[in-house]
Length: 191
Image 1 (cartoon, one colour):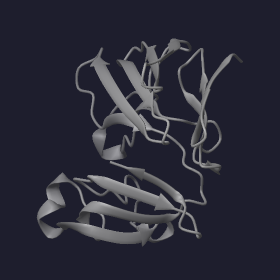
Image 2 (image 1 turned 120 degrees about the vertical axis):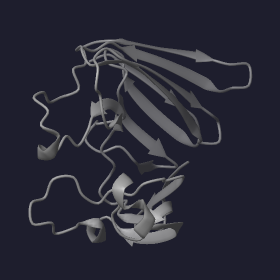
Image 3 (image 1 turned 180 degrees about the vertical axis):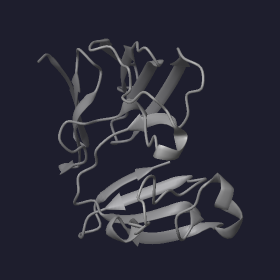
């Protein structure tokens, strides 16, 4: 497996050069990505009510991944990958202070794609959640009026909803900021 590693005092990111997927991300020594499953295009959360006959993300096994260092010391990693459902182009700008900008572009190859986005696995120790969005309980487009925008705090475990027939659950809409931390208060913030 050919890897591309970008590192400075604050951050260390390792990409799989064949797929462009982040295999590991360490911020100030804290592991963020779990199991090598960094951000990747996904048709996530297809549920039984959707009556969709296909699953998976349809991505080709390989894509491209390259890095360029700018005059300001930032490193820009550009990845792309084609797929039967959607082509992706993701650009990561890694700054010396540990901030990473992600610019993800999706180019649909099939009609009717829904709930598309990036999915990744986050270290389970980052189980404390703070967010600005609709809450405090789960909500969807058809339930937004019952959930006011605000700042909320919870845990991953408390986001579990014991639906009679679990399908898609725990959703929060209109999220603008998300902070995930461990018991010591260390973690990540996504805006």
